[in-house]
Image 1 (cartoon, protein in one colour):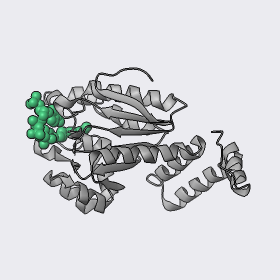
Image 2 (cartoon, rainbow, N blue to C red):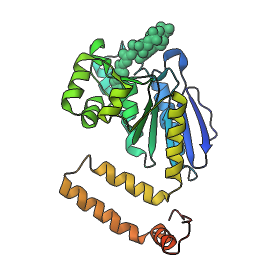
Image 3 (cartoon, protein in one colour):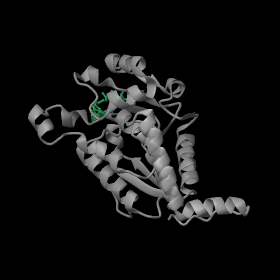
Length: 262
Ligand code: HXC
C-alpha cells in the first residue's frame, strides 16, 4: 500500500485508518477513467491490507469531485459507452468494499462527484459543500447511481427536483435532509471528524464491523421481514466468533476488550 498514485494521496493518519485524497486540482478532481482506475486499485489494496479497518475518502477544500470528466465524455458514442460498460467499474468500488468507507465532502460534489460521495457508508460534509446532479444541463442524466441513491437518501420529491432542475443542494440542506450524517464548520474539521469516526470504528473487532455493515446494507435490498431474518442469522453466526466471547467476557470482568479479529 506504499504505492504512489498520479491522482491520489494515500496515508494512514491513525492506526487502522486509511485516508485517500483525490488530487487532481487542475480539473477540480473531475473523475477521469484513469483516476477511477487508480481509485479502484487503491481501495482494493486497502481492502486487502489487514492492518486497515476503515477508510476515509475526501477531495480538496475546493472540490470533492466536480463530476465525471466532461471533456473525456463529450465524444463518447452509444456503442463505445455500452460496449465497454462505461461507468460500471464505479459501482465495483462500493460493491466489493467490505470495510467501512466514510466520504468527507468539501466544496463541489457534482454529478459523478455527488454519486461517489453517496457511495460512502457514512457521508460527512462541511459548510462549504455543494451537492448536485447537474447532468440535465449537459443533456444527460446521472449514470453512477445518482437517481437511485439520491432518491433513497432524501426522498422522491426532493430528488426529482434536484435531478430535473440541476439545482445544487447546499450543505445545510444536505444535513437537514439526511443526505449527510453531519455538517462540520470547516473542511479541516470535516476531514478530522471523518478520521475520528474511522478511528473509533477501527477500535472494534473487524469481524463485527463487517457484519454490522453487511446487515445495514441488506436493509436497502430486502423487505422488512427478510431483512430482519437476515440480521438474526448473522447475529446468530457471531456467537461463533471469538470476538463475541472476548467482548461479552470483557464486559463481565469489567476489563477492556482486546479484539482478536476472529
Ligand atoms: C472536466 C472539469 C469538470 C468536469 C471542472 N473542470 N469540472 N473538467 N470535467 N466535470 C475543469 C474546468 O474545465 C476547468 O479547467 C477547471 O476544472 C476549473 O473549473 P472552472 O469551471 O474554471 O472553476 P469554477 O469557475 O470555480 O467553477 C466550478 C464548477 C464548474 C461550478 C464546479 O467547474 C462546473 O460547473 N463544472 C462541471 C460540473 C458538472 O457539470 N458536473 C457533472 C458532470 S457530468 P480549464 O482547463 O478550463 O481551466 C457527470 C455525469 C456522471 O458527472 C455520470 C456517471 C458518472
